[in-house]
Every structure is written in C-alpha cells, then in structure tokens.
Image (tube, rainbow, N blue to C red; front, top):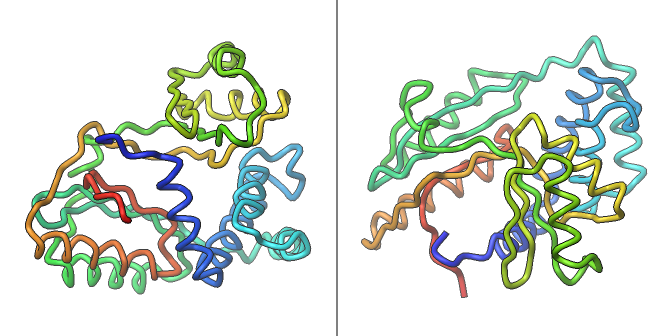
Length: 246
C-alpha cells in the first residue's frame, strides 16, 4: 500500500466514526439484528455475533446498548427484514469500488449508491466488474503497543491456527487468512489473550491506483464521503492509493 500504515488507516477511520457515532451505531445495530437472526443471541455459540460485539466495543458503544440490541433482535427475530446487497463500479481514473449495504429498503439504497457514484463522476457497473481485482481475506490487525506477545510467538499462534500470512509493520502486525479460516484464527488469538485493533473479512486490492490530478481526487473523495454518510452502507472497498493525511 505504498508504505501506508494499515493501523494508521484504522485509527483514522475510527476517528471519523467517532465524529458520527449515530451512523456507526446504526450500522452495528443492524449487524447485531442480522447476526442474532442467523445464529441466535448467545455470542459464545454465535461467532458472527461475537465479532459484531467486538466491533461495537471498539467503537465505544455502551454495553447496555449492545445488550438491548441483542435482546430486541432476539424478540423480533421474525420481523428482521434487512437484506445484504453489493454494488460494484468505477470512480475517476478507473478506480475500482465495491459497496456493501444492509438495508430494509433496497430501492432507496440503490438510488443513493447510484447518486453517490454519479455526483463523483463515477458509474455503477455490472456484478463482478471489479471484484476480480480484489482478494477476499480475513484481516486481523494488532496494535504493537497493546500486544505483549513476542512477534515470533504471535506468528506461530496465527499460522498454527491456519493463517495464510503474517506481516510486521512499524506500529502493528497484520494477519491474513482465508475467509474459511478466519473464525478459527480469531478464536486462537482470543484464547491466547490477544485483542486485535481490527478483525474482519474484507476485500484487499491486488493493486493500487494513484490519482494525480486535483479534480479526480476531489471526485473520488466525493463518492467515498457520500457513501460513508449513508446509514445503509456497511463497507466500502476501493483500490485508490489514497494519500496519507497530515
């Protein structure tokens, strides 16, 4: 990623989320509802729910809010109507963008996503038009300052549990897994007392694209900002080699 710190990016995203807790709490609330519907209200027996709870705590969601969300979802299991949808398209300079949404109104969400692309001079493509440029991977980022485990021991714990790769950066460790091995590796780290800064199944670009003209940069930021402001948007992946912010 041209020397970009993945951990710094996570912190930057978290700071932005901290400025819009209503948005991130709405997203997590929906994820809790879907996780409970799919696997029940007990996080010990529902890995997806345990991951959402971890995400909620990382974003400073109060414990009582989390518990209320789980209880409400457990009581409304038959009424949960959220649907996952994925959109793929291009921004300026051929930047590949994947948008994952979770919504109770597909028509509204589709219109909003298309509008974001249009306002940033991009366009929605057909399913599969850019996803081949990404690898679906489990990605676990660990803050060095919060980890007392030696790098070699951490690496062996991850690899023994089925991880594909282990990388050490200046301020963090990155563990990559297949989507299938993500749960087992996450649980192995949890048993070892290692708490990640971020743990998710994500889409990692195979290559990154730089944009040098000012108009192109403004348009890409416009698309990403509009998508980030939309409560129905769960995640946005792109292959823009975004410059570090000072």
